[in-house]
Image (cartoon, rainbow, N blue to C red; front, side):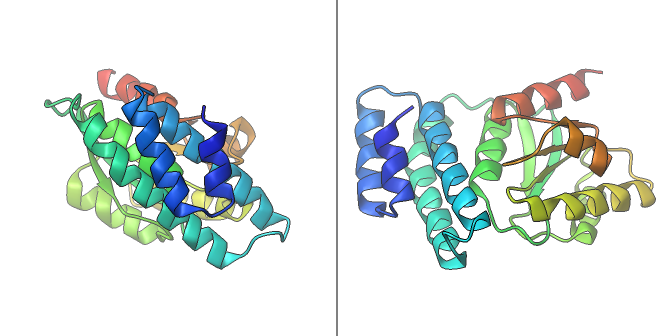
Length: 207
């Protein structure tokens, strides 16, 4: 993992972050390793936010930097994308949370591994997840949340999906998520990273 890239992102040096990303790709670094470095940087920024050392403008700028880096990486990864779709997934960052880098990494890896992903974006209310599942016929829902304030919206979303009588599997993931939070929210599983999300999704569609 590139500490140089992590430092550029946490220092809010967008031009340097893009330059380093291109240099890493040209030198043969794995796109997934670069995305993991981005996630590590966002972990640092998220902790700063929760301790009052960073504020909403920094979160927004960091998100914009992640989008720019992802735009550089995606064409390199798309070359290996799977063509046959295994299943449909609805994905989004829950209401009250505007972090998208972890979600974007998961969405991209699921797409590469053969899933039809409907990405609802960030700050998504429970009703919108329910509506999207009904519209798409998805059998899997992924809820992303980076800050601790995401726990209750995750729980509410899982409850809304169940109350609507939808037969879906729900995975959660992000910053502080662990098995205890999975139990609190009522989700079926939590994924530690993008590859864990892919493994969970594949396991569910093969059942």
